[in-house]
Amino acid sequence: KDFEPKQYMDHKMARRSGRFAQLAVAASKQALCSAALEIDDSNRDEIGVIVASAGGVFEMGNQEQVIEARGAHRVNPLLIPKYGAYMAAARVGRVLGVRGPNSTINSACASGTDALGQALNMIRTGAADVLLAGAAEAVVTPVGIATMGVLGALTKEGNDDPQRASRPFDATRTGFVLAEGAGMLVLETEERAQERGASILAEFAGAGWSFDAADDTAPDSAGQALAMQRALRSAGIQPEDVSYINAHGTSTQLNDKAETAAIKIALGEQVARRVPISSIKSMIGHSGSGAGGVEAVAAILTIRDNMLPPTINYEHPDPECDLDYVPNEARAHEVDVVLSNSFGLGGQNGSLVMRRYHE
Image 1 (tube, helix red, strand yellow):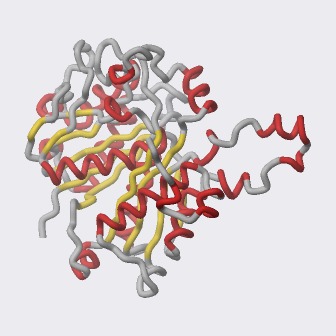
Image 2 (cartoon, rainbow, N blue to C red; image 1 turned 180 degrees about the vertical axis):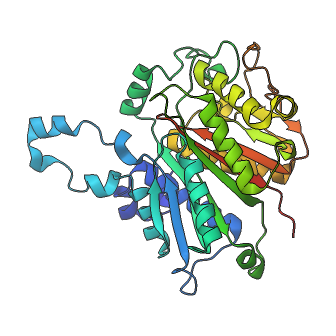
Image 3 (cartoon, rainbow, N blue to C red; image 1 turned 120 degrees about the vertical axis):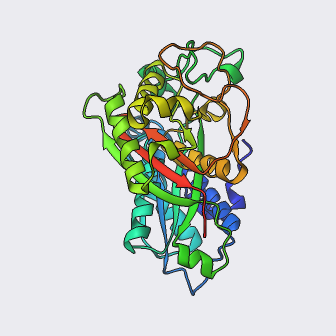
C-alpha cells in the first residue's frame, strides 16, 4: 500500500520496470541498508543477484486485443524488457550496478525458497561471496485474480470481513487471499561478514528440494516431506532440534491437510506434535512466487526476537490438521532452528533451514 517506486529508482527506470521488478529493487535496497553493506567500485564485481519471480505475466494485459484492434506496431516495444521474468534480477543488478551472478528463478509458489537455496549453494561452492537473494511478485491484477479464481484457489468468502478471509489450518478454510510483495536478503560468507563487522542475523544452514511427480495442482505429502528431510540433512540438523516451522499454509483444504501430513512424515509424529507451526499467510495473504522471500525474512525475525507469529483466524479445529499452529496470538518462544516450507503448483517443493548464529 502506498508503494512509491521512485523512492528507489529514477523516474525513467521506474517507468520501464514492471511492478514485480520495482518491488525487487525496493526490497534489495532495504536489505543492503539493514546489512550496512555499501556498494562501491571495490565490491560491485563480486555481488550477485538471484530473484524468484513469475515476472510480468500478470501485468501485461491483453496484448492480442491491441494487435487485433490497432495492429502489431502498436504493441509497446518495451513489453519484453519491462515484463520479462528475467528483469526481476536484471533490474536489481542494473539499479545497484553490481556485476556478479544474476538470475531469475521460477518454480511457482516454491520460487522464493528455491532462489534462497540456490544462493546458499553458490555461497557454499565458492561461486559467489555475496548475493542479494529472495523473491518478488506482483500478481494482484485482473489477470492474476481471474486466473487464480477460476482455478478455485482463492477464497470466495470474507468479502464483508476480509481480515478473516485467510484461515490456514482452520476447518472452515476455503482458499487463500492473493497478495503481492518482495523479500530480499544479503547472503555472504561468514568470513566476509566478520571482516566488515556485519551484524549477522542468522545462519542459512541448509536447503532441500523435491518434486511430487503426482499432479499439476494437488499437493503430495510424500513429496513435501522429502524436501523437509533433505533440508534437515543439508543442515546437519535432527528433527528434534527444530524450534519452529514456517508453514506454506495457504488456507486451501488440500494444501493444509497435505502439509500437516508431510510434517508428521518428515519429523516423526512425536516431534511434529511438539514443534510450533504457523502461517503468516493468515495475516499477509499469498504472494505466489514472492512468498518464500517474504517468509524467509519473517523466519529470521523469529530467531532474532524469540517470538512466533500467530496463525490468525484459527477458530475451528480440523481433525486432519491437528498440530500446534500458534493460534491467534503471537507467542514468546526460544527459537534456535527454523524450518521454512514453500510448495508450488506443479509439484515443486522447497524447504530451508535457518539457525541462530554462533561465532
